Length: 163
Image 1: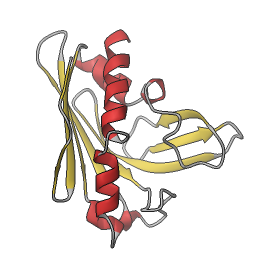
Image 2 (image 1 turned 180 degrees about the vertical axis):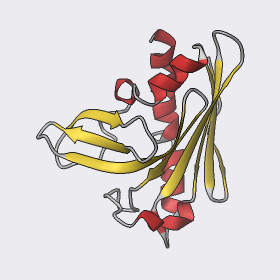
Image 3 (image 1 turned 60 degrees about the vertical axis):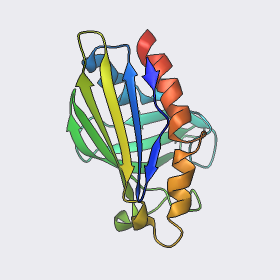
């Protein structure tokens, strides 16, 4: 497994990694298996996170289900093409609350490329931060920080190798 530090350029953050898993497994763990690696502290619901969910179809929701039963849909699936491509909106505003205006969401694109039967290259590009409005750089910088995509990447890489 190899991990690179995220590349932050202009209006995007890019994370590249190689995981020790076949492509179908890498895709499944990242998408419908998101609950197995998503940090419980990374949610915007009203109570502690019980489960993180990706609905497996274009137009599906990405949401957190809280222990009090509430759901907070913080994204929509834009591309669902197993096992090679997955894209979704990031509908979280600059104060880390739910963004209800779809035009003000950023976008996350994840591609999966087989290197051989047991290893997969995974590239995540978070872009469109300028859609968040004035101060968008704070969101870009936050998701590129060690506690953002790199922390989630680290956990994903561990989980996918053991799935």
